[in-house]
Amino acid sequence: MKYKLLVFDFDGTLADSEASIMESLRLVAKDFGLSEVDKENARRSIGLSLQHTIEVGLGLEPWQVPEAVELYRKHYNEVAFESTRLFPGVKETLNLLRLDFLLAVASSKSKHGLVAMLRHLGIFERFSFIAGAQDVQQGKPAPDMVLLALEALDIPAGESLVIGDTVYDIEMGQRAGTDTCAVTYGNNSAEDLIGLNPTFLIDTFESVVALVRA
Image (cartoon, rainbow, N blue to C red; front, top):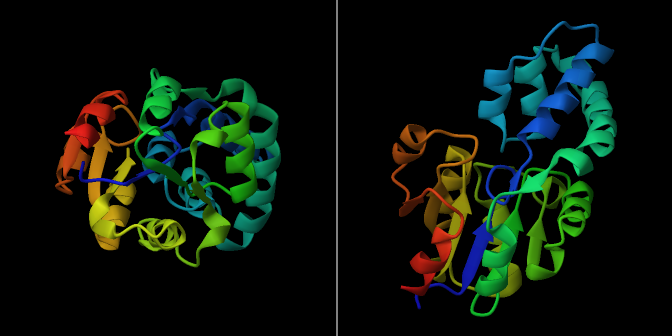
C-alpha cells in the first residue's frame, strides 16, 4: 500500500457541522443587532480561519471581529454538541482504516474545541495526531498543519493522503507535497473541487477504504 498516513479535515469531511456553525453565526449576528447572515459566503469560507468566516458571514468591521469571535465560541459551545453529527459510515470506516494506517486531523477549529468534539462524537482515540488553529502560524490553505503532522509522525509527504471537502484542504495537501482526496458531500461543490485537480474525488466517506488499500 502506498500510504502510511491519512490526514482528515473535520468540518464537512468527518462531521456535518454546518447547522451548528450557521446557528452560532446567527446568534452572533443577533448580539450585534444584525438582521441576517450571509450564509452563502459563510458556507464557502468554512475551512478558513474563524475570523474570516465571521468577517464574510456577518460583514463586520475588522475592529469588531475579536469580540465576535469570543461570542461565537460561547454560542458554539452551547449549540454544537447537540447539532453536529458524523457523516454516514465515518466511525466504522475509521475503525477499519486505523488497522493499517496512521490517522490525523487537520482543522481550522480551535484545538480545545476540536478535541472536545472528537471526544463527544466518540472518535478521538482513532487519531495519532490532531492539529488545530492554534498549532500553526498559518492556517489553511497553507501547508503548515499537514507538515506538522508529517514531522510529528515521521512520515514522508509521498506516503500521505490529505482528505477534505474544500478547496482549502486540497491546496493545503498539494502545498505540503501529499496526494489529495476531495469529498463531494461537504461544503464545496464537485465543480470547485475538480478545478484543483485532486488525486482522487469521492462521493462517500466509505470510498476512502478502497482508494488507500489499492
